[in-house]
Image 1 (cartoon, rainbow, N blue to C red):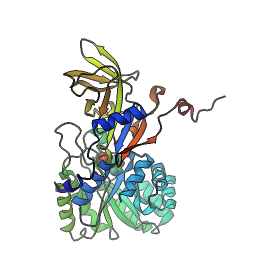
Image 2: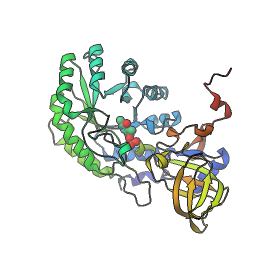
Image 3: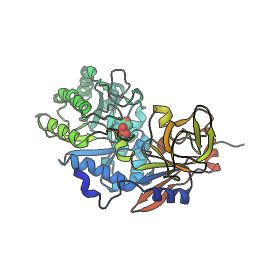
Image 4: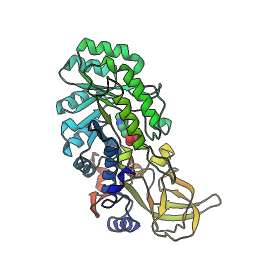
Length: 410
Ligand SMILES: *Cc1c(COP(=O)(O)O)cnc(C)c1O
């Protein structure tokens, strides 16, 4: 494997001792992120696409803690934002506006005006906003458009964004209308964008998208880049297939090089999950063991308020018992403390779980803390980042005052 040379100095995975140490020091429930793993993932991308014309924008909606953003900036990666507030967080973290991309969807035009004032790169995803943009800025501010290639891709329908019933992007069949607006307002289109979904394990999807975009490239003479979005799948289960980045890179670079209209264009990607999923660990403590005819439940001090992916997407997260690594393997159903069904895992074989044991959820870096809430008036967990072997608190656990914050109290 190409990336083997990192391993002698970087940590792919935090050890059981490191996880226990942080849980003891900072309490549970707790999110822990391994900075080394983020860097390894970034290097995996840059060493596969070693052509100096590929740029990676970390899709920060996966995890926006400001310390993570600063770390991502420090390793040379750019950032992709899905709201104007993420744009502001990225600038706050120190990114140059020229390294901040705002790929909008369904937003009011005021946010585009704000992004323009902040000087960041913008992808517009509706004819309506593009018209308003043209009217206000003409050709004075280069801009990208997000297209909908009508490709079904992604791990499940909730995270599929490029198909022909999707709200995302300008449908390619509306190319005529798009070109009319561009010509009328002389808009300077420098980027064509697509993002077809998340959990894509097959490079073919990107190649199909490329085919759709390449067909229309000649209509955009000022083009500087093609942005293929994110969605690279990582392994969640033992034996899961992740996307083969080296294969993807070879095929994408060949496609760009073999087309006279695209061989000088930059290739952009917006990986979110690929960058931060595997760096993250979520640690919970077992409150209650409940034996029933159907299952033995292990109820933990968390719920879908902290990690919604299992309930929302039927996502699988690997779970291990940190406290009893040699315990007998038995089946447990891991559930939360929310007053609603919140099952993390059903009848999962694992080392015997006892009350007060600490359970770790793997792949918790992406869309974990970020999608958490205060439902049931529970506190959001603390977050810790491990850098150079040192765990550091990067977000305090909520306190009672946080539940009242913003409320008007007479
Ligand atoms: C969510 C999103 C991404 C990142 O998706 P991942 O599956 O996390 O890689 C990239 N681009 C856009 C426009 C997105 O909305």
